[in-house]
Image 1 (cartoon, rainbow, N blue to C red):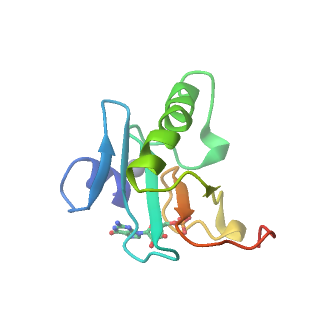
Image 2: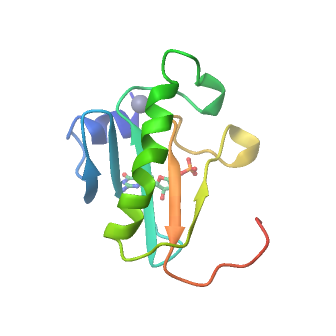
Image 3: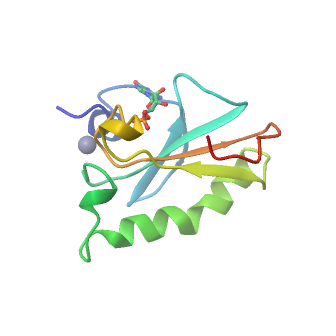
Length: 110
Ligand code: 5GP
Ligand code: ZN
């Protein structure tokens, strides 16, 4: 069972902000900023370590669509975050990118 696969399949509701045949973007249930969107590939990849030549097109597509997704949320300055693995704090083991903004973020990464 994978939470984000269930969200992609519509078994768990989410507030979608963008969807096409390859990716889904939805509002984070526990936002850390005024804009906090989670962007996922519509294929299960555990984390960044699972990106390979076959599935990297999903990641490329996410980044191709990020400007449009950000603009739809009224921002053009933002931070993209990916947590990979336990020590990085990854809590859902389906590759995802956080799009965070709508507030002045600090200059430091953490
Ligand atoms: P991670 O910590 O794995 O990088 O990020 C997982 C994110 O998914 C967290 O920011 C968390 O708030 C979000 N999240 C967890 N469960 C749900 C859910 O059921 N719905 C939505 N929309 N977001 C969720
Ligand atoms: Zn999944």
